[in-house]
Length: 199
Image (cartoon, rainbow, N blue to C red; front, side, top):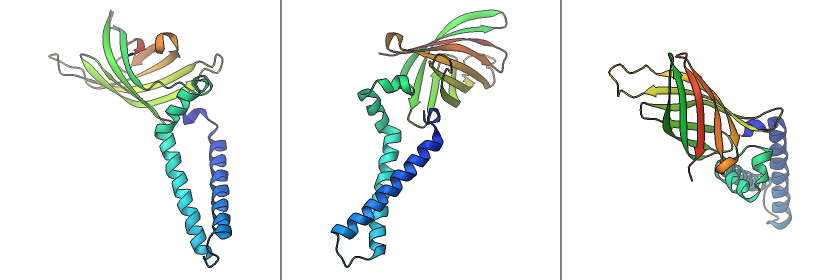
């Protein structure tokens, strides 16, 4: 999700906040601290405060943002929705003139810095290589660009070798959240994913 923000401005704002807080910490330690305290002691105090700020930011990036999204649901529309959790998938596949539907499960892991999805089906598992959240430039609808590696299970006499796939999934708020979109693989197959959030 951080990729949806103007990263240059985020870095500049974070740097300014760090500098202001360090300056305040040094000023406060000189104003209210022991007058015999050295400048080195004040700088040490300021940097310990900066370390605490850094740990707080890291905690927010990994855990706290989700609480903020619950408090202010408008962030789901302004930035990107929280899609983390368990999902049911219908995989509508087409392969060598044949087609069918397979039911599978997915686990989406999301923090403020990245998104990943693991899919488990009866004959294969897949893992994320790249997942990039975006907003449709015209409609503003959330999209997930997803590149993955499929590892077939040895449940057949001649299992396939691992292969790559890609999908563009569109998010809809219908029925608690849905993701859907077409996929393609390096085996020259394709189809459609339809994910619905487990309640």
